[in-house]
Length: 71
Image (cartoon, rainbow, N blue to C red; front, side):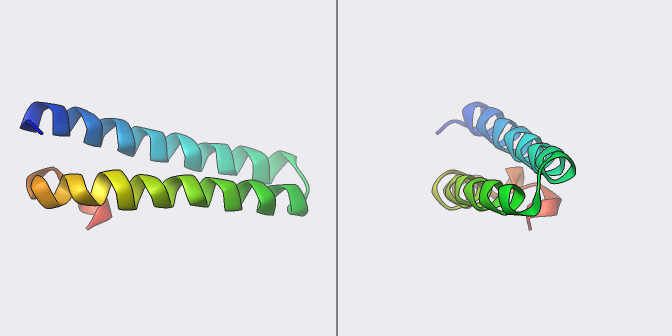
């Protein structure tokens, strides 16, 4: 993957992670605990897949793109 494409993908993944975290805050503040836990479990699966299947391989190939907060 070219560095330009890898940078764009990295930026998108970081942005999507932030958006998913924001969605967790929304659900936690507006729904009951059971609904929040169900939602959190689903978001956790998404974020784990993003990290293991997309981000880790990307940062292995392009370590300079790995954001400090993910090191």
